[in-house]
Amino acid sequence: MEGGGAIQRRNNAVKRHLQQRQQEADFLDKKVIASTYFSIGAFLVLACLTVSLLILPLVLPPLPPPPSLLLWLPVCLLILLIVLAFMPTDVRSMASSYL
Image (cartoon, rainbow, N blue to C red; front, top):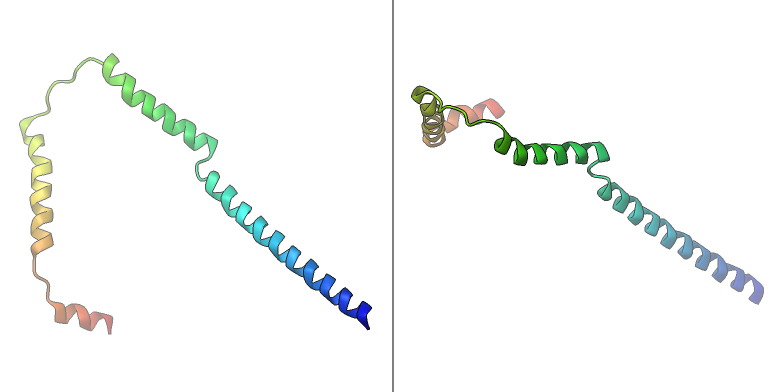
């Protein structure tokens, strides 16, 4: 009878060992996924974009200023967003549409 208990303990030890190895493999898989977040191609595109943004302004001639009317575009967009952000809404009509 003692031999049966030893075999059962060995089987339990093997099961624990296999579970531990599976957990380590899962952890390594997650680590590999995290390390390949950017592919090599995406990294090269980002590097080329960075270099071009650093070099091109030094090489290209200066541009003339934009028309003054075009300068008002971001100001008007900001004013529109502020108005929309503080515009009151009719809560009752919104709540009834979700019910």
